[in-house]
Image (cartoon, rainbow, N blue to C red; front, side, top):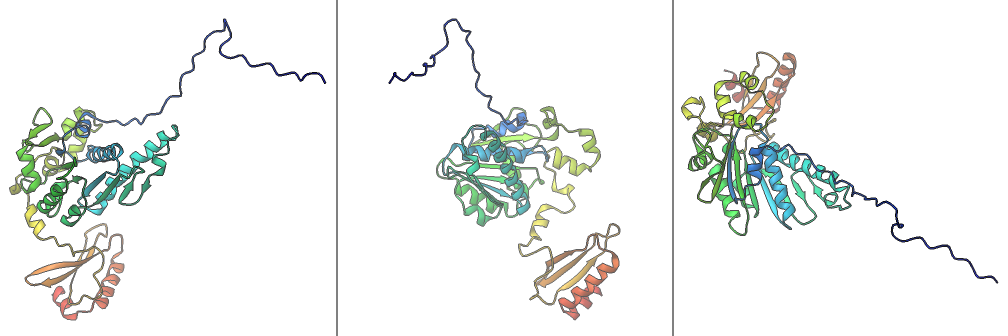
Length: 352
């Protein structure tokens, strides 16, 4: 049999004299985050303890979410706890972190990594494949003591029991290289946040060079004017025209107002707050309640208010929102409430 012919071997390399062709690697997509200088000052501050006095709606929470995620990406089995004033605000902070993860996952899909695709995202907890977690929950002394890791106190000037929360949080970051960051708009010349800002020279307007230093703490200050100068796309004149002087000074100019300018001082409001107060109807087992009907002048924004006398104070046990209901429908709800929570003496006295 004639020998089998072999296929000619493919030439290796570039044929002699052929032009050289350079192939560029596929571009790696980048997330274009419009970070502004005041945000970057906070995100990149190497201090383990920072305080940021800021205007409302300038992207402070977004910067907090970014710092929290960066800490967890750089460390295995690390924990960052975001403590907010309310459950709604905690969920909003968590949502910002989830947005970053979603965007980074889109970039990662081009790199065949799979890290962010393996991330577990729940309502209050984000678990990364490297064992790190971000937990966003409402602030209380109990929750602050329940975790050991980085702690970020968001809108801290408005936290109930702020002194107890700070003491518990600071205790939990004692060991290791854990960090604590405190961020808020001002809430009058009172409370732990104002005292900390005062100690860092952040309670009397723009301190000039930033960050300021005080002991082991690093201070940041950003009002709406500085934010706009550094790139925030806001029409200051239009924004100013829509609010009163006190709101403008405190919420946007980052000023700590004297409590003499506030009709209801913060300590009076805090003293009237009870954790058992609730929105919605009261529990069925309660009796002897006082019922009030707050009738709105327009827009049908009325409410039914249930109070209980405890000692020498009245405690709110329920608030039923009647927004959008016609007056006859509101009357029906009132009659139903009187029948359901029977207390004829209390009802008659409430309407006397």
